[in-house]
Image 1: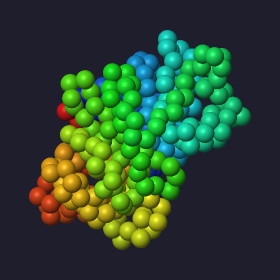
Image 2: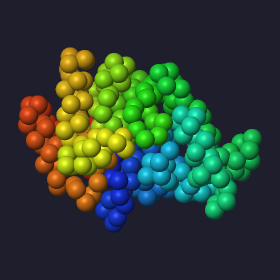
Image 3: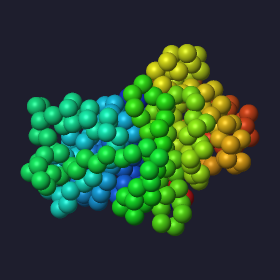
Image 4: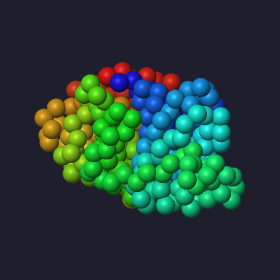
Length: 257
């Protein structure tokens, strides 16, 4: 399994991209920078998109991906909670500012096929087993465990706040991609809006080890660029305290399992 980090920040600038990851070139986790990071030929190979939640920085490029799909040979399935797809349909793919690609070229055969995914159900998607697990955020959200045919697996938390112990009960990944959306000094605010600081992430990682009896490879994503160095130092401190190497995700990074 090969995971490409297309975007791993909460802001977009020349060298920064919004949240999006690509598994083996065919399965996207979120769509914040799906078209901003891939050539047209690479985009055409994407067969499915898993949305963790509705927020713009995780769904934005559905519109440009849909527009580019006019030149592609096959439709693409977009999975998410019913609440997520309802908001995406009414606010992003509403057909007012641009074409609704969930109904284009026809309602019967659209380019973007919206598919509801249920929490705790394992779904076969493009040859992968996908398990959606609810996480704590300001809107309904899930993290995804994705397992390949050869048993390689990752879990991507998406946006989440503290309190993942119930989530850990359901997963056993080889790679944990966990968010850290700000420095520890903003801990109270981050918790109130459903995000993690490095300290909160440390607590969740400790709980994971206690519950599962091991620690997977850990990569931190969803970092605010204006606090990049501060977050990196705090994450490094967590790794030192726990005696593990915690990686910082970056645009263009490739992880192989």
